[in-house]
Length: 294
Ligand code: GLY
Image (cartoon, rainbow, N blue to C red; front, top):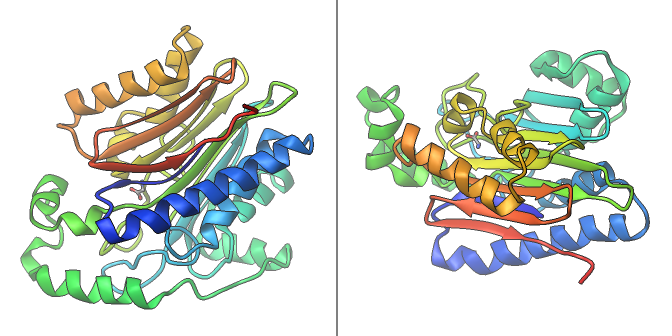
């Protein structure tokens, strides 16, 4: 199951968004078909979306208020609950790949900024300028609308006045493989005009990403602060651990977000250990796709 972000997808972008997630689901599924692991599948699916400028992750990441790129991502293997995460990346081509390398080659889980980029050099990772014309234009348009006084406003006020800032198109994937292992991965540029140094849910294990073979896997999208406060990916996995199928688990988590966080935009995808899938959102849209053996 893959997602290309919860939010309000503009009519003219829906076609390319749906096409992008379909492609990513196929890429991930091909890995599983060739007996690849769930971990390989979620990484491949997310990399595919990081390379597609339609989405706000990797190429096409949105800009901070001071016109910087700060990408973040995380990946988790349900087989052994190993996890890797990165943040504050400027130009790494595939943040999710660096997250995986951190998981597999260091004793750490989460490395950001300078240190993460140093590791990327060590691993010989490719770099790329993620800036696209359309993101620069969106940044300019939204910044003009935002008076100085509003720049640190509470999220609710900002969302009411400048909804386009929060049209997050974070990407994510969850998978179950033939050996009954699950994995989850999430990657994002954050949201337009975010404060520099702001970290969202996507690189946080438990908030944006969670996988455990004892329950299932989940990836979140939407306003990161919601998923952080409710530790939403882990909450969803715990719900599956308690016997709820994936669809029921994501719906319960979205209800929780509505109850506790006033319905701030949130979307979730999940897979449980029986291969049942789930997707739910309280945002106007969730761009997502799935593929099963059938
Ligand atoms: N969910 C993406 C973010 O809030 O950064």
